[in-house]
Image (cartoon, rainbow, N blue to C red; front, side, top):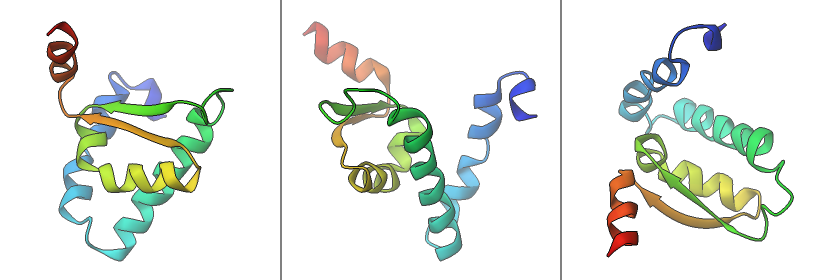
Length: 96
């Protein structure tokens, strides 16, 4: 299983360059969108107040796949929050 390997998130993220390179192909678009929708259904929609608050994202995966994330948010009637590539952006803004 993927999650029995060391650093499973790093391993899964290693596929991102391939998906970014081929994101204009219909098959890859459908695959990415399906997985984004599955992620929201499995993990995000389980929270009771999820429809009441905007959902924010930090990191390169959300940043580079933002159109797919936004489409999944819209499909599930979720509020779109901010997208930050680097967590330092938010920390600097917060402390200024």
